[in-house]
Each structure stands twice: as C-alpha cells, then as structure tokens.
Image (cartoon, rainbow, N blue to C red):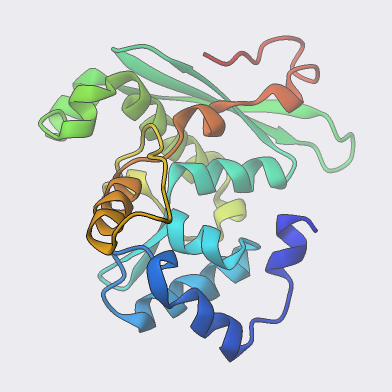
Length: 215
C-alpha cells in the first residue's frame, strides 16, 4: 500500500492512541495535543501520520515543514527541484509541470549564500559548521518552495520564513536500546534528516534533458 493510500485511511482514536504512545512519538512533542494537531495538518497535505510527526513541527501555533517534506510534496505534485551544493552557495532550480502539455518548465532559480547565512547569524549553529553545503542547499530549497510552489504547501511554513530546522545525515535507530538512550537518539533524529534522499531527483532526469544531477 502506498504512502498516499495510508494517508487516506480513516484515523481512528485507537490508531491515534497507538501512534502517540511509546518510543514512536518524537521527544519534541511535550503535549499530545500538539502531536494530534500535527497529524491532522499532515493529513490535509496527504502525509502519513508518522511522516507528519517526524517531518513537521509546531512553533508558536504555526505549522512548519522540513525540507524533506517540502521536496516530497513538490515531486508528488508532479513538479521538480534541481539542487546543486557548494560550501559557498546552495542553488535550487524550480520546475513546474504544465497542466496542459505535462512538460516540466523552469520557473525560477533560487539561491542561499554563505553571506546570507552569516547575515542571519546562522553560521554559529552546530549543523551549519558541520554541513555548510547541505544547510545552504536546504535554505535554497525552502526559498524555492515558498515562491514557486505555494499551492503545494498550502500556505504552511517552510523553514525559510523564520523557523530554523537543522537538516543533515539521519541517525540510525535501535528499538532494543534503553529508554534513556532511545530518547537521546530521538533528539538526534530531530536535529538531522537524510539530505541525500531529499535532493535525489533521478526520476525526472530524462525530462530535464540530463540537467538533473545528484551529488
């Protein structure tokens, strides 16, 4: 069954209770109500409940999306983002699929530079020091989604608009570990997400005449 099919299934109170109990619930959700609200918003976007809990967040009552969630929604809608990374600048080229010709057409190029990050005082953060190219790339992606695909994210906030989300390599989880170690790993998982998975656009490479590459 596909993720989209799972997202369309009725969400019963029993299923919801099971999701919100035990180690499956990310540690950042201090209140069950916040987790429920996140799942409900994710359902509006077509995201499965667990994906919503891991790739969305609530800050001061506003719902935000991780870079992984944003790019997933863009590709699911039939569009594409081509991303290149360097330690000095992240570049995201946005492509929208014409509803009549079904051809992907370039609609804009969006960048986020090292100077932009320094101006916003982001470079002091640990993830920016460890993965500067990835972080600049994520910011470029967030900017592209905000301006080129507002209909896809339905007005929910990408990290570009003032809510900082660190994204990088994923941390492997071991369900047999003690609870305190599991909590530490959940906290690490919240800080990082898999960059390579999100930036992979192989499935539209042919349509973009070989312009899409992954690094």
